[in-house]
Length: 468
Image 1 (cartoon, rainbow, N blue to C red):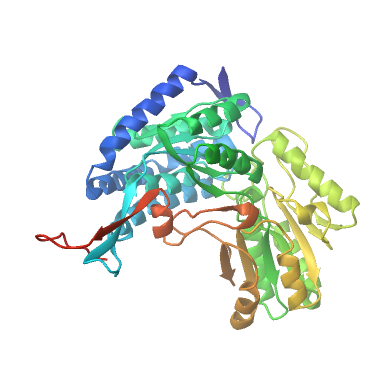
Image 2: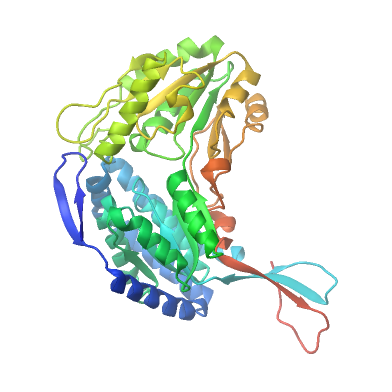
């Protein structure tokens, strides 16, 4: 079978790739497992030198990689460049801080001496999405490899070029053969192949970024095999605007959060919960700023919103918009697919969205902002928490009041007067149907380790120093 990638800006085919058959998949897993045994015994500093070399290559090749990202999934070139730069930053941060994150951790106990040790698990199988085709991969891979694991990637088929570029990136940086490998799997075979890989005894753990449906399938397969999982799933993040917020700053941030990456981000603000007293002005400001967005060819300077990644995603989004309007919401801007080649959708603002409407209850993965009006702070809190998701939350208003409201919203991250974003130094992940486990920071680097307790009851001879 083959995978053919398509440019979502034009609808034209980019390239075709032969997929891996069962024998090839087995060989890739065998190489990864053999290399993981050697890599686990490689000194930490040597492992981190690999990440430094990867980071340098990312910087050296940033325009090449960004152009590939834009061609395969459609984000504006300026945003693709930013994605590559963030990947390089993550390499540097992990290389700098992993020695303290992975250091033995002394714990006082009844022992003469006791401590925790963070030991690698083996091969980590990663199922990754298309929306940040380099960042999603590097944020798991840097942590997994630093901790002494090997990585096998099953990327989304529509970014197969990125998957192979990442494999080559690690090879060019001097990674041992098999340490980082990409499986090429056609869409109809993803479920069967993923389940088989997860069940393989050479695979120690699994991580997935994607939909809650995909997360449930992977978690079920991993549960049957008794393997550790980290799931970063969807979100319906609330962006709460209190009546004492700086409305212009909030509206500017709302546009960045909702329409960056074409709205195709799990941590994009999706439900804008706005105090009644300021809602009319906020919607006016929001509509004005959305009108200033430039939709078009993502390779052109000045374009701020590119196409959606695939036709089926655009169809799904338009269904959600049409249903929400039929249910009584008001259309402020946009609301339609753009005629012609490519997968463009007008930047859209919906007002007077209510619980029970499609755009309130479902995750909208595209350039659509749903404004929900709140009577007061308690009502805003209730609306924000009226979701099964729990990834990020942003609250705008006077700092003390916004923090008080935000602290009662269920989420993996709370941002006050700021746009929800990931940072290599801070843990990232959700709760509820947004998944579990953490990526990035010390917590993410330790996720795929065996946290081993070491207990020495009586010292005979000198012991190695154990420090923080």
